[in-house]
Image 1 (cartoon, helix red, strand yellow):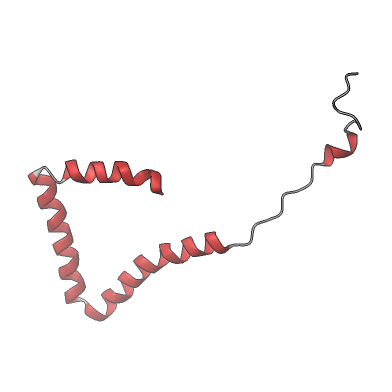
Image 2 (cartoon, rainbow, N blue to C red):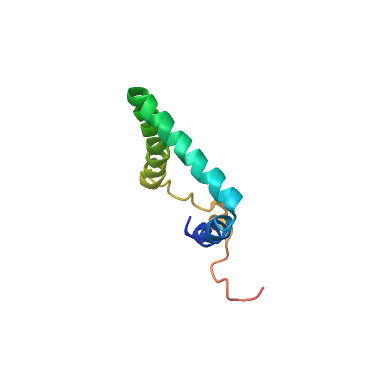
Length: 86
């Protein structure tokens, strides 16, 4: 995720230089905030699901127990002295 922060910051800075992009972005944010204020009880549930879902998924992936790596089945066929030539 950290490797995307640089390009994301770069795109944001140069995107916000344009008046059209800035107006569209702030207009969309204003529309979303207005919708949240109008549909007060239900919108909080939608926002909680939209924010909580990815967070819950992240914590599940990070805290999931790791599977032990399987042993190599060909280990029984190795020579006893691998450094000796044939």
